[in-house]
View (cartoon, rainbow, N blue to C red):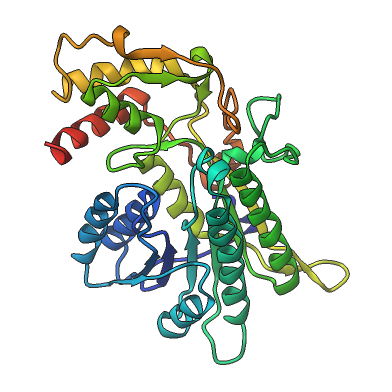
Length: 359
């Protein structure tokens, strides 16, 4: 880790607040902390909404309930009273905001959910962090929050670097994520709250999100339905395995941007943003090919499954981009880390999990 501009945080015995804890990344992060960090206490918030199969969220929560140091609050990020009561009761020193309404396409049909969770919800988190600095409260040492590769919009330059201008979102979802970065910057500057945004690139793995392509494809193929491959297969995605994402988040949690004053005596905002991706964009058609092979290997689909009969190449969807590609050199420089799980290895773990969970 490049200590020049980071304040080191030891996670032992810390109180960590994770929003979206029954979600894909949130549950994996909570499990990792609870099973590897001595004395850590995790409080998780989730609204358990029906955006996708709630049984998955319940299964993830059940796993977390086995840990003594885990507390769960069912509630909404947009409900200020709930957020305030969590800060009063659990006094979190580190906050990881992963709770959000996800999905690009859904933001076109259901915009209210995004404004509520991603804008009002994030504002409530920032306010609670700010008030943690009031007298008699436990100050938040680091706010880590999920941004998204979607903020790059239709940027032509690849790979995407955090130095690029990102002023051209092509979906409301992307606009809310960019807004989170702007709001965090303002709060870091005004109230000296150390914050780090993480732009996640297509995250996948076991017990992932059913609205994601690999999961949806699997469900459809199993039912004998046809899968649609957008942009006639000319899509590239920087697929990132969930364990790689969690490892990145855990490392980042332990290095907060340093609080220091500038020449004017005012805080230099303790603010940072990183990409977490695989630096290895995969063509959608190759991805589908590997997925097929792994689903057959795991016994989810029969050996003689006729894939060609179930594939349809279709045009691009609104809000989608043709390529995502992360430049992760800054993460490597500051935290000595870059994701490395190969697509085949990751999809193999997904296929094996799927066979077990749905059989």
